[in-house]
Amino acid sequence: MKASDLFIKALENEGVEYVFGVPGEENLDFLDALKNSSIKFILTRHEQGAGFMAATYGRMTGRTGVCLATLGPGATNLVTCAAYAQLGAFPMLMITGQKPINSSKQGKFQIIDIVRMMEPLTKSAKQIVNGGMITSLVRDAFRLAEEERPGAVHLELPEDVAAEEVKDWHIFPVHEIRRPDADQKAIEMAVKMIKNAKNPLVLIGAGANRKKLFKPMQNFIDKTCIPFFNTQMGKGVVSCENPLFLGTAALSDGDVLHRAVKMADLIINIGHDVVEKPPFFMHVDGQQVIHINFNSAQVDEVYFPQLEVIGDIETSVNRLALALDNKLTNCSLELLKFRKEIKQVIHEKDNDNAYPLLPQRIVADVRRALNKDAIIALDNGMYKLWFARHYHTYMPNTVLLDNALATMGAGLPSAMACALIYPDKQVMAVCGDGGFMMNSQEIETAVRLKLNLVVLIVTDSAYGMIRWKQEGQGLDDFGLEYNNPDFVKYADSYGAIGHKVQSADEFTPLIQSCFEQGGVHIIDAPIDYQENKKLFPEQLQNL
Image 1 (cartoon, rainbow, N blue to C red):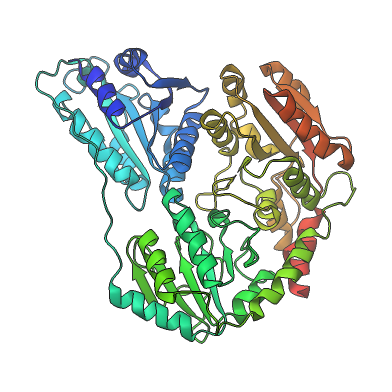
Image 2: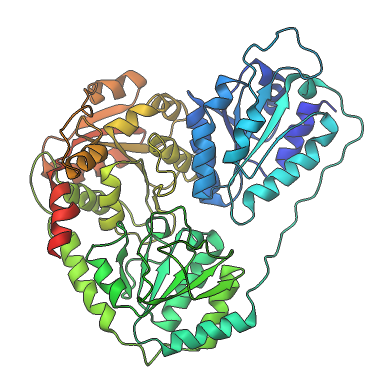
């Protein structure tokens, strides 16, 4: 069998549905083999589009997303995507081409050491030096990408290796790997600490945002009746409709939510991931913390838990819920008094008619316009903090935001991947004008794929978050403003449908109309970021 055909066979064995990519001449044998397979090839307009889509496929399904690029500049364009998947814990395999390694007449043209470049950004990066290695390397790459903590892996397939014939080969079967359970003594110590606490508080972090954990987490909250909050990437694991939900930690300290955090004498931190901005700061004389995770805690000056329950999170929370038996009767409901105050702060400007639109109104109207199971994929900018803090989530993985690498340019491709995977759900990309333009060419891909997708661009003609921080440091307003294209005409040029919001009252009906029509829609919504300095930090200081 030709090595490239064997590679595709190994991918089919792993259950791969899509390969996202921008091929080069070094990938042509691979591409030809892909043509006759059960795998769908999704051509994008930039390697970043392919990488972000593959990473989001991994994030949403728990299965490894796959992307393809050529050597040299094609591979370097995947670097940001590798970091995105690695820091975000999204399983993804990057396949890149390379010049022939046994003989080549092209000198060093386009050649860089891609494997060494990828090594610091991935769990594993390897070159395939002969076709007989393909099936074992592919199986191992998928194993590494998906096991805790998930992340990015890379395989380089040189042009001559892809073309060679492989005589002796076999496919390695995929089997489920069971993770070890936490030590019984650790469970018992955790139960004792929880029972002795007067004001325990659960924190749901990014590591708890796994498909197998949604029901166990909900069961744990319901059984113990302990109030909870979540990090930005833990958002939606347990519904905000739960009466024990306090809010999302959009900031590390100083928000109204942190008044409840500081009153807690014990924080049960489930799925803490150090890549996220800290949702709270520990102090030597402060509350105790139980760390429940697949891996031990990375200790620093703001996080040093007193107890660690290390093992499979699902079995840990199930065993804790069983050992605690029923709702804790000795727990004070003192923390829940903050719920009303937090909701009041969040919703006080939901119906403000100012134009350009206030961030609070934008978030509230998006929530009003969408179904409970709708998915929003956020790019990165100031609006992300507003959505993290104000947007209500009812189901897991319905708000995709990046609080790890926090790269711009990922929002649109991420939403496209969701629209591809879940064609019957409402999917919206929420981007700033800066982030949207970094990968706006993928609108052509979305139109070509006939996706149903609404792209909301909040426009302020500046890099708003950096401008806000510039002002906060007392520096001159300099170097962060730019001009935008006419986004309505821009949409039309790709075959999408463009809209511009002219008043606050028309925003919600416009979103609803876009989803009713179907197809790809771009909405230009001017935003007034003056609220940033009222909330961050002036209002916080007052609180």
